[in-house]
Image (cartoon, rainbow, N blue to C red; front, top):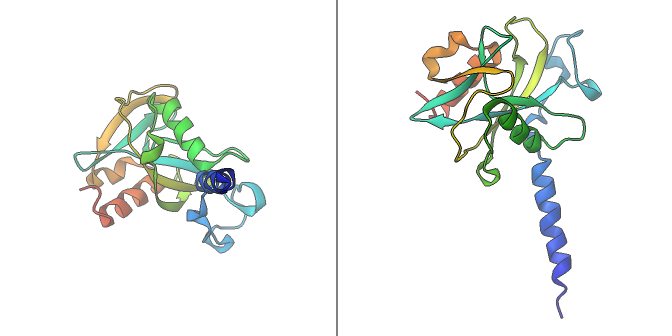
Length: 174
């Protein structure tokens, strides 16, 4: 007789590993960041999970009430929090939507400033694709939502401009 619980535990372990999978930034190197820059735990920059939501080859960006530049919907990843959980939480907090968990896919990780000041603190932003059946609305600290193309890079943070460039290379936006 086969014990199906043993196989089920393997599946659950794989799912938990997948939810905790943030190896997109495993290539992080301390030399990539200047000495003295604000860092997260274990010498790493603070970590953020961000969503790319596309419509008609445009990307949804958020205008936050305390910023002049646009940024991706995102959330800081709390200690011990799986990055995808932070992503879902951030979309709830800034867009008022539930991201379909099965639609979440890994894209890439960027290092840089997601601040109005290009020389602001460096973060490690892991970028995911995802989708929602809900219509995004600005909530919480979000004042507005804007669908952009690569032509809008000058309206973004330095990390945002880098992300737009990468999304063009991946042929996801114009």
